[in-house]
Length: 166
Image (cartoon, rainbow, N blue to C red; front, side, top):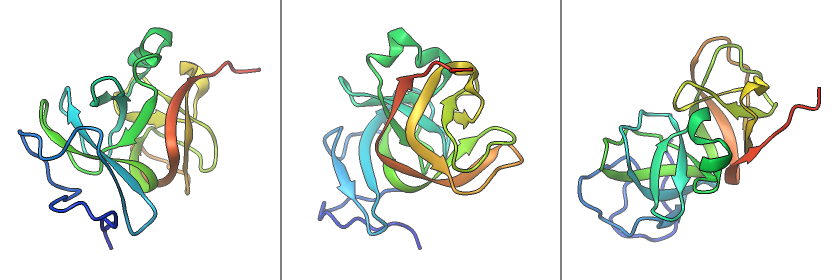
């Protein structure tokens, strides 16, 4: 059963996108499954289940990838969200911030381990090559193929620098 908004925001639909703002960008709602969703504006086409970087100063989102999660970019986009529906560039919609979410991962991504940004926009992986850890998110099952898979996100899920101790 899909998540239902419990916070009382009238007219909100978590799967609806629009070219005009229907709510204030940054508005958050809670859902029946314990999730939190945030209203955002896409600065590029966002694919369904894509992991996104949320820019706190503007409330815009971009698909999360290593190149925007570097030391310079991390200062402007620490928050992470998960698009449960596609959002066209310059359009508005909702992204999951926490709870049981579906998100894109690369091949052979293990359950219950740290996940990192990748060069593949919108996808996470358990390989530590990027040095950009996405804290507060993990898979519940191992993925053997590059796919969208169910996982859990704590709020706030965020991007942080990581140095592999090996």
